[in-house]
Image 1 (cartoon, rainbow, N blue to C red):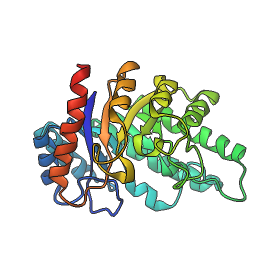
Image 2 (cartoon, rainbow, N blue to C red):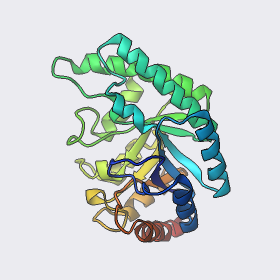
Image 3 (cartoon, rainbow, N blue to C red):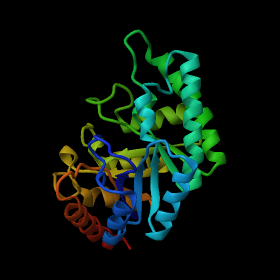
Length: 273
């Protein structure tokens, strides 16, 4: 397993972006110096020249993109389940553009989190699922052609009203034969579930392509109450070789806390090499 940590290409108020202050080079230099293998990159809409410049910085500091997150798309207030066909098609095409950017940067995973959309009061869950499945079928096929895996992310019910149970998200992908779709699991969101994290990991084993690690209250791993030894043991048990990527709020003492979290996780991982 490899270790990653979140950073943004722009000044963002979104809480769980760990490295958000300074230039992209400043942030990548710090991430690299600690020892992280990659970064979950929260991005604005990059121009071609910005994409190439960022690619050079990633190569300079030997940091990969553990996940590419075109976060600006969430600000469009559109989604993959918008009942308006034209708006939904427009959003799908915008997302496809970002899949190309991800591919150019060498990213191999992208998330489907809040942008899947909420279930609206006038809607039915069956109709919502059908629209989501059609949208995901289209974008995931496009992504697969470019070597990028799209990952549906279960999010706790305090933040969204669909697929807040990881096992339900897993079943949905199988029910609709969305073979190109994968799962992004997040220790923070799964902590809200009624099942232990290790049990959920084993249930979803063949579809997990990315794992976010943040502790209770969006703290960094080791600062809260989540049992990362059991999580890493379960992931090792299913043969997971992807990223454990930190998506946590560290507005104060960012470098020191990110360094401590790296040491904490790396110490656990030593037992599985």
